[in-house]
Image (cartoon, rainbow, N blue to C red; front, top):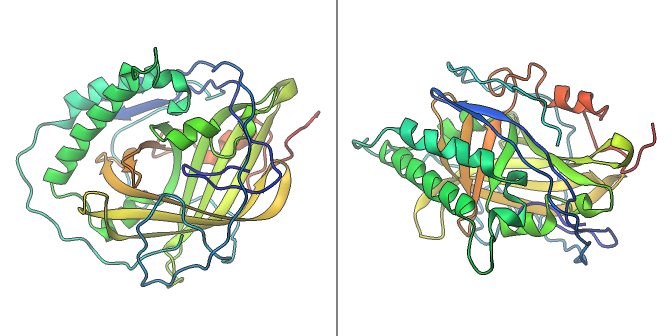
Length: 356
């Protein structure tokens, strides 16, 4: 099985590309409001898989800086539970239509820079949000990148450039320390867009969306702080929701832990990283599978109301997330409410195929 934004695999599982995707998500940053509309991608074949590899989990004081995918040893897997962020936003955002469609390093606060005079985010965001609405399939659809080879799509390029301007403004204002990011990242998130090539190759996280009759509906992330654990900052859960035959849905889930710490990026610039290590998963209808994978990204931008955030992978790939819940897209029950609409379990994965 192929997993995460870099490759996480388990031998013997099918992989491929999603056949359809139709998320419609509304996000507001400051006073701007966006309705995201995605159209289904074309059917495609299923590709080969790679084998799984194991390696030991580093200690709290180690700081690894290689690819997005590190391999880790087993740690206790914990079932997800809903978490609300401590920091309450002030703006309002609504979901207008149901969306249907490794180890850790040392923890230390990064130094706070003196704020500089910067341009306002609102004009940039007002341009970015409509562009996000034009993207197909969270950016995992190749049509967002290739119009006529070898030319890149203007949609993906424009989104990346606009995100870079917002990231530059955020850095000039002084950014966030490690402790500020810990508070801001807690909660539930939905992937809105990514420029990750591996996500495009997998058409999502696991590759199961490429099976005949299946498609990618959404990718969700839950970060639950655990102040009692000295080794990690909390529990991490990654959920991939698929459309399935007969109008049904399926859920793949990865479980592990996360750590937030300071780390140098590809340009040797000190950033605050979110490092997620996954060790157990329910994928393809199989429950409690041992997996090894790590998703590392540098936190580069977040709105003042904590509803929209950006992250960059080690190779500068962009990830844009929107908060889910009453303090985010307006879904009162958060991710669990979204799962209930498709009769999917709140905890753990589901069978790949259901008749009833």
